[in-house]
Length: 427
Image (cartoon, rainbow, N blue to C red):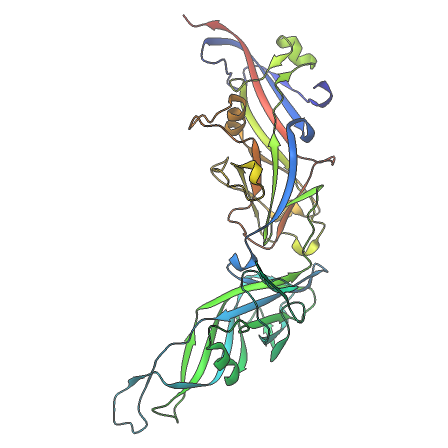
């Protein structure tokens, strides 16, 4: 292992591990940095976890980062079954009326003021969808992509649509955008079994990226008991997703975490059984040294971030990294996952994925000790050596956290710190 070990030695700086049988009188601390091919096997990158419909809002973009186009798709729930109206003769109190006719409607969007890129003024276009589409499987090319039913959009990106006009929105003047829709559209949307009902929102401003946080359908209606009166009814019940293009390809040299659908990386950890060959180590202890859990005082996985090869997916917010063992590696990519290796996810700031990448180190001492021991120190059960890196929750956002992968100079490394000691045996 001499060719790939880096080491530093010191004494009495880190508590020693001697299995509890000795009182240490002198300690030797040894740090090893293992390159990826020395401790990792079977690296794989996977995608397709969840959909963009799982996110709390809808991204809309036009040539963001020079490449990303995204369009929001909305679908509204049922309007109230009854309205309150006063009869035309005015002699009776207000009464519940179930027979009313929609005259016109408005789609009211509430934009996220914290996710506005490329403004402050934006040109947004709305339109009612005319093709059947499926909320959870719709993509830029496919309107429906389910088992046994795959249908492309007649026009890529959620089209065609019945135009509902273009609205100018200034992000400094409020968070609301309103599109008018006619009575025929509202009537069609009242049939909840129609698979073509919906509303598409597109940005026409080049270099823009926005997020629709919420939406509402408001309708002016005419009750039958008083046709000369107009009342407003609304529904805030809605479903929301978005479709986007392009979708970055998976890579074996730069793995990506996050996105929607989400991406993961997995590999199997094999910690070497022996340490030998380094002069500092062999001068202090007899070589080769057999590695065991009692000697290990720290383990940390070092990931080196890099600027995304797809600028449209460059993180705007921190990327959450979670490490979990794959409980059934033979079932990857759909293996169930175990509990987090660390109790809290590691938040990586967006600047780590800009032009100045950094090193992200994730402590995993207990996990590596358990691998060396062959069982969990908490449950006594076997520990899976296949580790999964993912976001939490999954998916979390459209952005991708990009790291150097195996086969590159900046591939992940494993930092290990051991202590060795000669001690006085306990009586």
